[in-house]
Image (cartoon, rainbow over all chains, first blue to last red; front, side, top):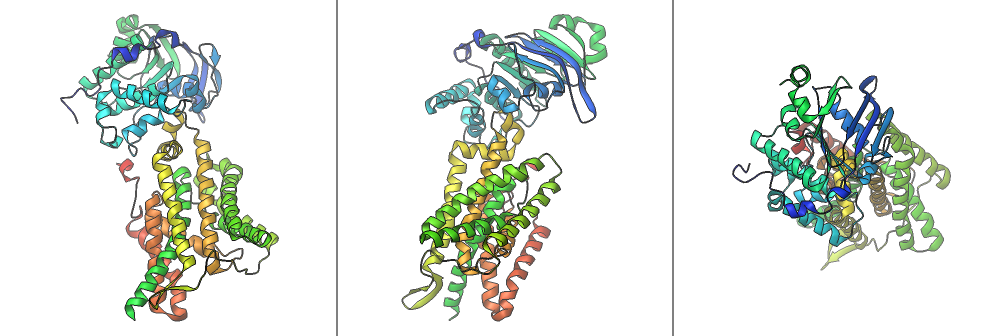
Length: 261
Length: 298
C-alpha cells in the first residue's frame, strides 16, 4: 500500500480537456424490465442521464441498481423497454457492441484482471477501437500521464496494486475505450475514506472537464449526492424518487426511508 | 551398459513426452477458454491424420500431407466449436462434456466408414534408423528429433503469440475474466473459436507425429489422448508451460518404467503407470504442478 503517495492521482487538465462536451451524449432508459429467471429485478424503470452530467443511482441492496447498469451495457438482455444513447436504441445489443457505441461499464469489485500486468489490463481497454500502433501508444501514454502511480507499476501484475490503484486502473481502462457515457458501479466500495474522496474527485473531473456523461451507482448515498447533478432512488426494481441531487439530499423523509442517512 | 541404456530411455521419453505435451497443450487451450475437457481431442487428431495419409498417398508428398493435416486441424477445431459446443455453453457443464464424448464417437465412426477400420502404417518425415554417436546407439532416430523439435517450435510460437500479440492478450483476458473482456469490447465467442482451432492444430500435429510409431486406425489416438490428458492434469490444465513439462515428466516416467521392467510386462505397465500418476496427482495436488488460478481463489 502506498500510503503517502497520492493513490488516485491528479488528472492533468490539459489531457482531460481535449474533445470535451461535444463528444458527450445523453443516456435515457425507458420502461426497462429486466431480471434473472423468475425474478424481476427492474420493473419498468425510466431514467434520464443528461449529457455531460453526473446521475447518481441510489438505493438499498437488491434495489436493482447493478441490474440497471448490466441491462444498459448488454450483460443481460432487457425483456422490455429501450436504452437510448443519444437517440439510438441499444437494448438487446451485446456488451461488445455497446462499448463500441460509446458506453463503458466499470463493474463492481474485481474489475482488474490480477493475472495480467497493469499495461496489459490497460491495453484491453483499447480492444474495442480501430486504432493504429502510434495511436494506441499515444493513448496509453496519455493514460499513464493522467495516472502516474500506474506508470510506475506498468510492468507489474495488477494483483500487486492497492485498492485505490485498482479502481484507478479500471477507470483508466474504461476511458481508453473513448466512451461518451461511463457507468460506474460502486467505485468507492472497500476503499479507505481518503482514497474514496479522491475517486469521487476524479469522477467530478471526468464530468466537468471531459464532458463525460456519468451514471454513478452508489450505496454511499451521501457522498454520491454530494458530487451528482441529478439523483434517482430505486426500491425493489422501481424508481421511487428522481430529482435534483440537492433536493434529494435535503429530503429528510426520503433519506431516512431509502438512503439510510 | 547402464549409462547408454539410461540415455536411450531418457531420449525416447523426451520424444514421446513432446507428443503428449502437444495433446496436453490442445486440452489446455480449450480448458482455459471454456473450462471444458475436450474428450474428442484424440478423435479429432486421428481424423486429421487420416486426412494427411490420404493426401500423402495422392500427392506422394509427405509435406503437403503434413501441412494439410495442420490446416484441417484448425478447420475441424473451429467447426466443432461452432457446431456442437457453442450451443452447450450456457447449459450445465456436464452437457458440454457429454457432447465432446459424443463427438469422439461420431468422429471414430465416420473414420471407420470413410477410411476403414484396418491398421494402416503412416510414413515418417525422416529416417527412423537409430542415430549413433561414435558407435553408441542413442535409441532415437532422425525422425524422433524432428518430432521433439516440431512440438518445441510450435509451443514456442504459441507462447510468443500469447505473450506478445494483441490476439494473445485477447485470449488471455477472455480466459481469465470473460465478463471484463466482453465489457472491454473483446468478442469472447470469437476468441473461443480461435482457441478450439489452435487446439485442433496441436492435436493434428500430435497425430501426424505419433502415428508412424503406433499405426493409424480409428481408435489409434485413444491411448495417446489418455497420456496427453494425464500430462495436462499434471501441469494443472491451466498452464501451457505446465502442459509441456507435464508431457515430458510423463514421457520419461513411461519410458523408464517400460524400459527397465522390460519384456511384455514393461509394455503393459505403461498405461498402469500413467493411471497411477493421474490418480496420485489428483489426490495429492489436484491443481497440478503449475496451478495458475490459485491467486484468484484467495
